[in-house]
Amino acid sequence: MRWAAALVVFLFHLKNARYFGGDDLDLVVWAFGPGAVGVTFFFILSGFVLAWSARPGDRAVSFWRRRLARIYPVHVVTTLAALALAFTVLPELRPHGYKETVANFLLLNAWKDEWWHGINPVSWSLVCEAFFYACFPALYAVLRRLGPRALYALAAVCVGTVVVLPQANAHLDLGVVLYNFPLARVPEFVLGVALARLVQLGAWRGPGLEAATALSLLGYFMTPFFLNAYASTTVLGFALLIPAGALADIEGRRTMWQGRRTVKLGEWSFAFYMVHVLVLEAGTLVFGHQPRFDTLPALGAAAVVFTVTLALSAALYRWVELPGRLLVLGRRKPRRTAGATG
Image (tube, rainbow, N blue to C red; front, side):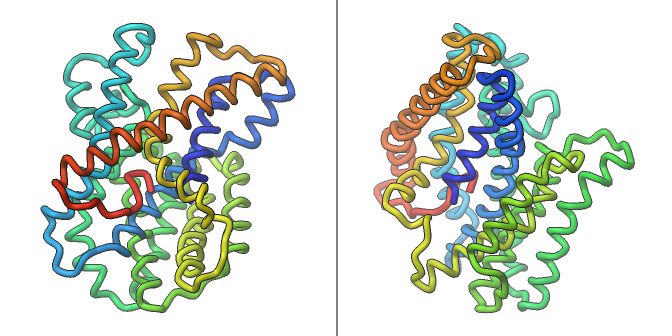
């Protein structure tokens, strides 16, 4: 599922690159325009998996160390790659001074509106994740004591907040950019934690995987019809989809997500997410800015960019992510958990 979410984010940014023109562009905008909602899936899944894999008696410092080992090596390498591109062939990626660069390396840049999209544009979501990780030990200490009724109430409040907050922000003209602001994305993460606890307690009552998938797809295609609906149309579908997938695994039911290749793509998904915009930016050196090709050249350009991104993600996973985790954690074998973006 992580791979599918990373893929729709890639397709969203591919749409923005405008490889396609004419009627093709209209189809691409319809199909891939809502792809940014994949980040909502990442945030909910992150809360779910961290709660699911929480260790009894685990110390906060040990938890934070494992999360640092999970996200930071790839973040550092992709940031260095972005800076190398910025100061050579892609000046549009160049940061506005050393403070923005330092904030990016420290995963603080999304707290400042002017910096949230700087250097490696997707790193803003890691800033949100870093904030979630900072809060998780205290948050989980409270939520693990809640019973099913309270957890259902909390989940409903989180869904309601995600739906209402963007509309309230627009209606009250507060001028706050919620999409990248870590505090505004906390309800999605808390929702994931509550859902995991409900499944752990055997109290989850929701639709099966097929119905949850259908509802998620419906929400995906409804996104363009709601102003500022970066998450509000899909949050309910994703909140049903993730527990449904977990229960399918627990019960040993076969699903489309369990194949060897699909699992491998899931392992590569974090690196894929972190590198894909850099590949698209570098692609402008070959294909130009918003070239609006005819159908076959556009498909060819998209295939090249996708293939390069996938190859780099495999290399990053093999040569950066896994060794980086071992470097931070020592000789202990790293646990296989969901990544920073899922």
